[in-house]
Length: 241
Image (cartoon, rainbow, N blue to C red; front, top):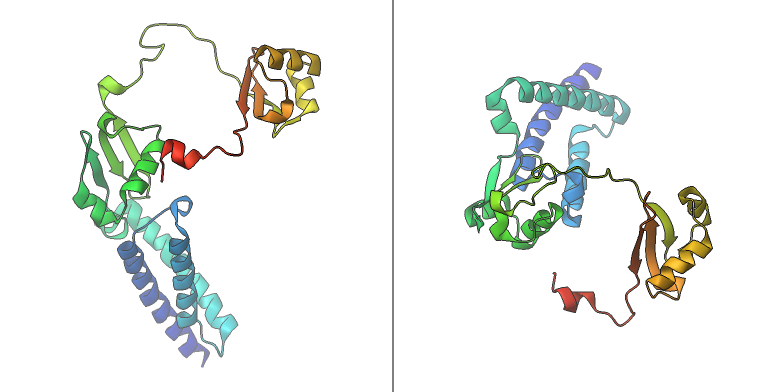
């Protein structure tokens, strides 16, 4: 009896694992941080259905253990094939596609990946790119990450390009968060409330509660971000969907 459960679970495990790989490629591979809610629901649902198909309801512990071992071994084998075989990599991994070339969106590749203009623009902004015309190439990698190459004439000039020596950057100490002073960080930064108050007055800020965030660097430079008024509509101002 146990041998038949073992054999059945192994066969079902292998077949379902292969099917899951095929389905995941059809759906489109995304890293967890880029999953939308419906992507997450789909992944959870497929995982639940796979478990129900593989595991024998009359011998849950035995078949579940076997299935877990089989999936682990198959995952290790898949990783090994992915490392050693070019053909396996082409089959297993999502295809790398160019989405932008010389400032022009390649719409056919966008449709293949089922990615919207809004998603593409969001991914570009994550790379600090706000203008399509600045992009020489944008490539969607097989892991769901976007790589962007900026045109040479649009890249900022660095101090190294001009043979300039610059001071190293330092971490910022949080001084005020949501209108409240963090006394401990004042001590760490080597300042007191009197110094802070005088600096705020110099910047024409009379009420600490109006400050959403303030921090200070090693050169005693104060970085301040004030709260927006309650009637400020950020969507209407910037028009980002």
